[in-house]
Length: 67
Image (cartoon, rainbow, N blue to C red; front, side, top):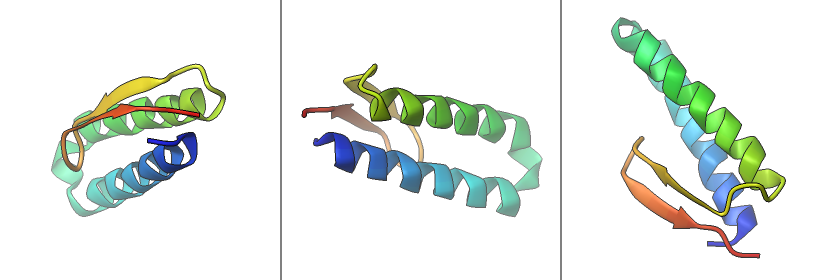
């Protein structure tokens, strides 16, 4: 997947997590940790520090970033 597409995927995942936290306040701690992880990953992918990652939310996916 291109870097641009990977960043887009992470932005969409961050938005979905934010919505999930707002809609389901009972599981906030786990969702907050996942949100922090995705935000860190987003920064790392944007600057090229990470070239491969896995997401568990909203669907399990393994991404290899290409330039």
